[in-house]
Each structure stands twice: as C-alpha cells, then as structure tokens.
Image (cartoon, rainbow, N blue to C red):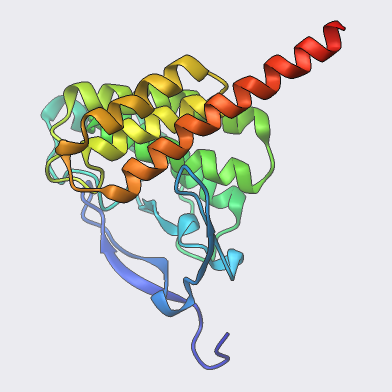
Length: 239
C-alpha cells in the first residue's frame, strides 16, 4: 500500500433532501484489489479495512437523509413529508463522513434502507441494500442476521423482477433471477433455487450474459449434489 496516498478520499456531496453540502469517504480504485468473489457477488478485497462495501451509503450529517447513487433524485410530496417527520425531526447529528468500521457501515445501510422505504424507492434499490447488509454480516460471521437479511433480499428481488423496469439498472433481469436462485440455495430452499436457476437458462435471451448462465448451471448442480449428500447422510444415520 502506498505510504504517500491514503486509500480513502473525500468526495463532495450535496444532500438531495436538505441541500446541505458535506463530504463522504470513498475508496481510491487503485486500492480495491479483489482476491475472491462469492457466488452471490460478495467480494473480498486485499485490504478489507478499505473495502468499498463500507462506503456505499451517504448520510447527510445535517438532516439524516441517507442514500446511494442508485436513489432517484425525485421526491413525491407524501414521501418528503414522511422523511421530514420520521427522520429529519428525530435526527441527532451524527458524522458518517470519516473512516468507517463495519458497525458504522451497518448503521449507514440500515438508515439508507429506512429512507428508501419511506421514499418508496424501487424494489431493486432496496434489494441491493439488503444484499450488502448480508455481506457485512458475513464479514462479521453473524449467521443469524446474514440469513435474516438474505430472506429480505430474496423477497425484494422477487418484487423487483415482477414490478420494476430493469432496463436502465446495473442489474439486468437475468442477474436478478440468478440472485433469487442463489439466495434460496444459501437458505436451503432447494426447490425454489432449482426453479430460478432453471429460469435463468430458459430465459437466457433476456441478456447476453454467459457468465451468469454458467453460474446458474453451477448453482443447479450444487443444489443437486447437496441434496444427494443430505439424503445419503440421513440414510446412513437411519442404518
């Protein structure tokens, strides 16, 4: 790691809700060296203390409005009133603009999820926040909370697939179907996992994404193998 250049830098931001100007930390791209990526896209970096995962949500220190680059810049009058009543009026000034711990990052994500729910953001945006909380709990080896947020993410990705226009998002329809299958696999819901992995292969014309199609096939085979191992273990135990 370079001694003259710090991995983090200050990005100038302006709160979309109250227009307050503030800085938020981001990680310089040269320091984001991935060493491993899980089947649900969680990436482990060489310098984990500077993982970009920790710095995705921005939190306005003035009013508490919490958001990411995926949030819409538009507010309906009812959502603006909800945010004002349930976040701004109850906000105790806090600073999320410095170097973050995993605990800080979790708080920032949960604030962003609450904000997104009040603002009625698209399901795909909320699903992405849930998934990143899953990854943070995995980093902390908290299996209970990881599974809890997996269930929330899986439900929201289903809603996104059914209701959202995914054309202009980072997640195409094929990737959403794959993630629904993978989250179900990790939750032990084998039939649901196979169903969605199979849909990826069937609907491959939705997007040219051979990597995802191969990952879906791998996931399908993994479910079958896990099922066989479980059946053999039960059979041997019964004997």
